[in-house]
Amino acid sequence: MNINNMTDEEFEAYMNTDQLDNDVPPTEDETGITSEFDEAVEQTEEIAADPEQPEQDSVTTATDDETTTETKEEPTEEVTEDADPDVTTEVDNSEVEEVKETNSEDDVLDKYLNTVSKVKANKSEVEFTNKEKLEQFDAMYQKAANYTKKTQKLAQYGKKISALEEAGVTDEQFNTMLDVLKGDKDAITAVIKQAGIDALDIDTEQELSYTPRDYGKSEIELEVEEAYSEIDSDPEGQVTRQVIASQWDYKSREHIVNGMTMPNGQTWSAKQIMTGIHEDVKSGTYNAVSGIATKLKIADGGTKSDIEYYLQAGGQYAQQQAYVAQEAQRAQDQERLRKEAEAQIIADAKAKQEANAKAKAEAEARQSAAVTQVNAGATNATDYLAVDKMTDDEFLAFMDKQIG
Image (cartoon, rainbow, N blue to C red; front, side, top):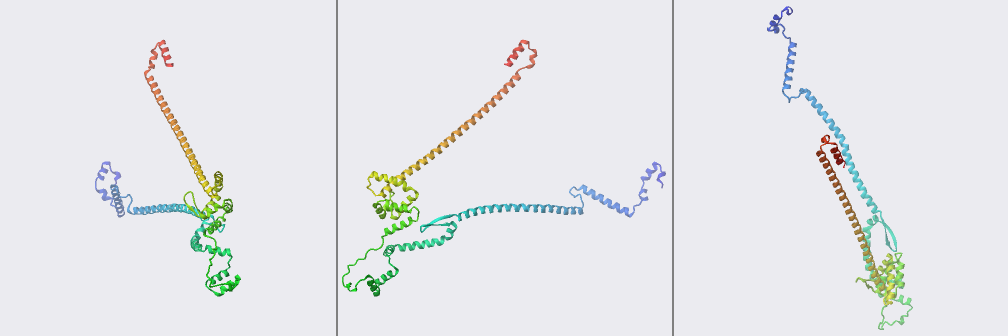
């Protein structure tokens, strides 16, 4: 049928019939395309109807998820890589601080260990570092303890040793005497011959009236000798020795040997007295005290020993030093109180000045506010529009009042 020759009414009638579908049957390819198109349309409508449904298909979604996952992992790895140096840096800083603190402590310890001090021994000074002292402490302590024990044991033989030294007894003579004491006839014969004694002049049956002589130095003499030995190890030792042995009188030396009771009630031995005088010589106290002692001796007529005057002068000197120290402390306290009072006066003046400044500022603010209010009230009260209604006299009077 040729639709080009149809009238409008015939074409409309033709289009309303079912012949159009029968005239143009769909092919298999067209049917497939139409079916796929319809399915796509249906899926599109379902997607649009379900807002929770993802906009992309499952394959695309999976691919995007994988891509997204990989994309998320990459920055995570980068952040981790970036973060690791930061963490390492923090740890390194902490370690550096610890190393610094350790080094500081090590420096202090090294300085202490390498500090050198002098030790007096056998009239000479020997230098030791603190490290050497610590390393040798155990051994030196054991030696000192053993030495003290041996010294105490030998102390009881001091008198005998001094006697042998004074007599110049040799080792052979000493052994011979021991053999004589044991009754060795050869030793006795040797002693008789050496002494030039005739054996016939010896009456063994005669009653013995022999009394052994007392040889050797007394304990007091040994103590004084030991004290001198320690004093002589210092440069000032000769000065101390000269004071005791030459400058002071004989009574003073007797007091030293016999021991004395000090002004504080303590009893001092000869060695303690001599050591005390020596400490005064080293510190310079002796020169100050001896001048006072000389005045006391002259005023008293010399009825006491030099050491007694010295002890009396030492008491006065101690009182003077205590008074001087007390006055110095009092002066320090007064100076401290004066400074505190000055500081308080300054603080009060400053506070008063600040309070005055604040009060002045508040007064000026109030005055300024009052002037503003007055001006505002005056402006509201004056009717400047009424000026035009004033006569000349009224206007002049008004202006005089405004000008003031």
